[in-house]
Length: 104
Image (cartoon, rainbow, N blue to C red; front, side, top):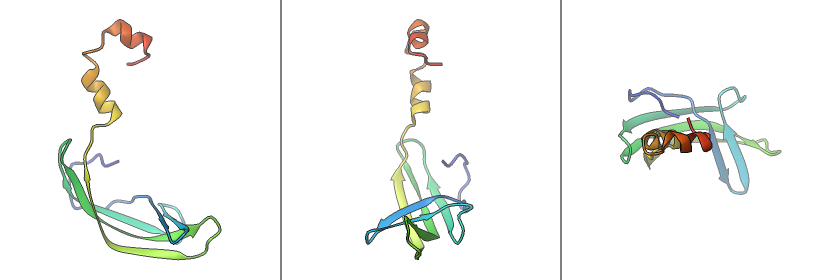
């Protein structure tokens, strides 16, 4: 989850990859792995989140190999989350119904 507003600062991420019938994984604290993502564009809801990524992933589920990714790119549409949607709907659902549904 990207909670900042700044751009261009690398941050640690977790990566999973399935390729050639093998699973690879990289995460903070996992030996011999590294991951970096750099967000270059962060728009409002409905806009794009774009950037680059790289890393060294270790094979798991019995494997011993590794895989290096470099110059990866991503571009995804920013969607509204459940919490954001609930906040928008908060005033539209009567308090007594919210209580029965166990909503805040």
